[in-house]
Amino acid sequence: MARKLNPQGLIDQKNYLFADHAKFEDKVEAAFRKVCTKHKIPVNISKEKVKSGGMLLGSSAEMIVIDANLTPFAVLGTTVFGNYLSVSLYFLVEDNFLNKAVSAGSMGGLQALAVQGKNLISVRSTYSFWNTTVACLEEALSELGFEEVNSGFLGIK
Image (cartoon, rainbow, N blue to C red; front, top):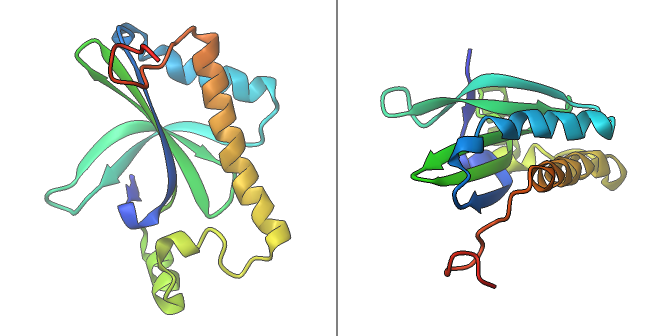
């Protein structure tokens, strides 16, 4: 069964764009896993089918799911567009029946499940997971030698 993603469950996201790196798309996952292993990050990393949108009009793709046994999880995806490689990392709560029911009862929406009913001490784990995941991805991209295009003129800053 594919995990269902919903924009209402999105807590945070990071997007990176690399010119002339399309051929390196398959290297991102391996580099990310290597960095997580090196830093002994306590997560499960798996390639899974994820689905977004409705039953008939939705789309699906194989993406990397990073799970730390918390309500929110992270999804890492790569997209090739011409010679560009786009890398996206999403931090979200899954759109499933149980999560929808709990969030409807609390009036907080899917996003609120990330911190709902938790004290500030335990919420640290949730945000430590996200911040560490971002740091590991950025370290992996750096180790691959990728230089991000983050301004309009071919990366000229």
